[in-house]
Image (cartoon, rainbow, N blue to C red; front, side):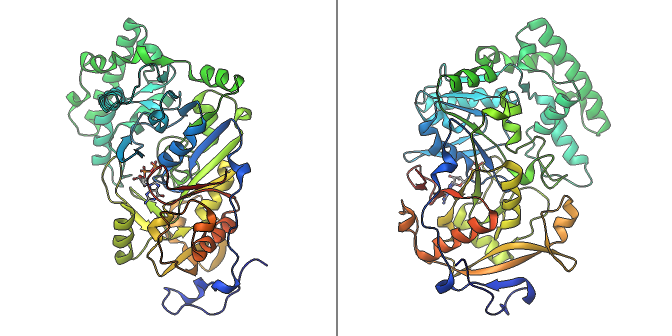
Length: 461
Ligand code: GDP
């Protein structure tokens, strides 16, 4: 027997016909986590929602059993927060595995590399006692983010009629330059004359564009400014695809760490309110320089509720009171920008979509503890669009803006989960909530995170 059926409708709900309640005595709960989801030597970790799902924490936990951790897309717009003992580290460029001594951390060709941020982070880690020498490699095929990309990013947002809400770190313009074949790669900088020439061309283009956007062309900076910050890149240049292939051939474990989330993927997300790269698991192969057949497992990370930073639709958004409460409980402020994140109920259609697009072998549910005090919880089981129920996650942002979530209400557990280390330690209602998520998203739960610390986790194996 699976679950209870509709018993009555919730009169408090915004629309009676869209809310169902579940009853505890009829519900089944998860009994154990599926270990098969985490098995394999090459595992991708990918966000299932709008980013900030806690991928850094999940990678940090999985990194224990990996030898090499690589990022495959995004740039310094990603912000992963990880803890070592009581110390907090916020990483924008360096993979989260860096806190595990001796592991090799790589940035693949799909990443755009901000040298100022990268070396500031490396120096900061070294200053805090984390040995980074010989442990960080950056693909020579990766593109570099320069000050003119930042200037273009800010000028474009200022001039836009409809703002995307970018992090202002130059990521979009750097990817545009890459696709426009105007980019500067680390490989270019290995030859100083060629590097100078490519940088000069980049600046010329940026000056023209800044003028068009009504900004000061001098914001593009000079060739010497640009080259002053790239000087250390050659010392970390690497052939990332080759390193990963050699590690796998030698029986080592590899983790490929995604940034942002599925709903922000430039193809599969809520376009145009998306990031500039493919965030989904397919990009892990392309962005790290290996073939897709080398990947054994894909773990999707989803928060036990939903958040979104930046602009664009969020169907399950809370009302303002709940929004403030959960933002506070979950500390939902951007790690990169400090911007408050919009919060909402768990949106199963988004995560189910993520399970399919990424081919998930398992799901890691994070921040379950944030819901510990809530008397009851809602899960959006589907969407209704102009009277039609059962519409899938739509391709159009404007349709997502219009959908009405179909909610199911489950009772809260109202007791702390932060000390749980096994499924059996969780309150029954928390297990029921997770079980319902597992059913709705059609992917097995492989890990549950119940706090920000490394130890606050329940894992399948
Ligand atoms: P990422 O970009 O996906 O790595 O996510 P962020 O690091 O931006 O946001 C996740 C935030 O939640 C960080 O501050 C983490 O320390 C924190 N976090 C991760 N997992 C948990 C959890 O299970 N419970 C709580 N309370 N916080 C968590």
